[in-house]
Amino acid sequence: MSDFHDQVVVITGATSGIGRATARAFTAAGARVLGAGRHQGRLAELAREVDLALTVDVTEPRDVELLRTVAMDRYGRVDVLVNNAGAGLFERWDATSPDQLRALLEVNLVGAQRVAQALVPGMVERGSGHLVQVASIAGKRGFERQTAYCATKHALIGWSEALRQELHGSGVKVHVICPPAVDTPFFATAGWPEIATQHRRWRPMSAEAVAAAILDAIRKDQREVILSPRAKALHLASRLTPQALDRARERWAKPKS
Image (cartoon, rainbow, N blue to C red; front, side, top):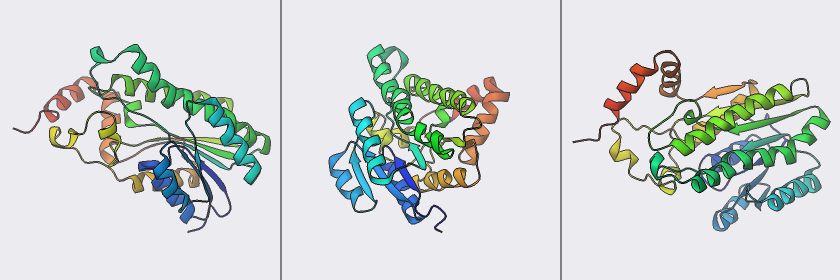
């Protein structure tokens, strides 16, 4: 399928996991992909699969300005921005320092805002474009050992919902994607490599499935997508019967004996 033929797609956090899978999916759909990330070795690999790979740290204003300049000089426009760069922290609330929370916010919220402010105004000027915010089911429901991470994803979703209202009538669409646990290095790098052995019902989604959902969200003009039946049920139960869900999660979370 080449329904994104010749469209310019910028993806942050594109060197692994969801970002890498999304870069491949857009490329297969005919898009010209600018993949941005921090990992130099993986950027070299990414460069062989996309139109352009660029070193970008979303917490660095100069990097983001360079991203904007390169995108405009090379393509003259950006049709789709996928704000995927993110970081995690799996730690108890009382062991999470304010500095750790600030660092996480700087990537997951402020970084997303910084990139959007660099690229979305050009979409507004042209009267069309798509901003995809890769959030999480953790932005809809709190989870143990994830107070800081959940806070940042809740904030990202709230910011995106408010931004959607401000962009109403501009031709720019905002899509929020909320995946459950995904089979990527995320948990290991965020401090919870043993999650699979500690949680009996852990069934991660593939990064490719998330990437497919991102493209579908644009095709179908979906404002918010909660992925996987289990995540949808979790979200619904969290809204309707939160106390019963808490009790059930306590049972599910017991490690294998």
